[in-house]
Image (tube, rainbow, N blue to C red):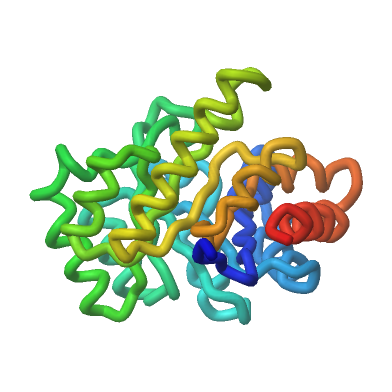
Length: 247
């Protein structure tokens, strides 16, 4: 029997509630309120990315999320001294190191842990020493997984963007195969496997069915869908879709 995480966790990324707020300024809509609604709807955790340019989540959001939500907070961050200091101050449950370029609209690729080994090693060590669970957002490639394990990161999040953006059919099937092989290889190395980026109701099922995957992180699609049906119903439908695929 293959290894199966019986409960597939759902982390809800609330960045783009802050994007809407910042488009006009002020305090509405409140990403902390969104996090609380996500918890009511069945989310297992909350993800928030504090970017260097503060384009959506603000420092005050991280402070409030740490203080006011009962779910684990997954703090997405660039591997910089500034972000390390913020993580060490607030001590979130987890810190996911992601690549970041100011000109990109969203995270466009996985973190190069092979090329960035020397830079990442001390940051990962300091986070781990502080009791923060470290995750690395990487492409589903064997060399990246091998280096993640060597660096001592307990968790990797596989970048599902290429799979989600591939045309349905042979191209998407090839990306899913790549994802499945990476999940199995990473699990064999002792890594906990998460996945995320670009997942929606159509694409989530095949990824949720991968037995080694313990958690999916989904944000932009859920916030967009919430405009039409509400955040609670969007999250509950995603939860049901994930559960059906895992069953």
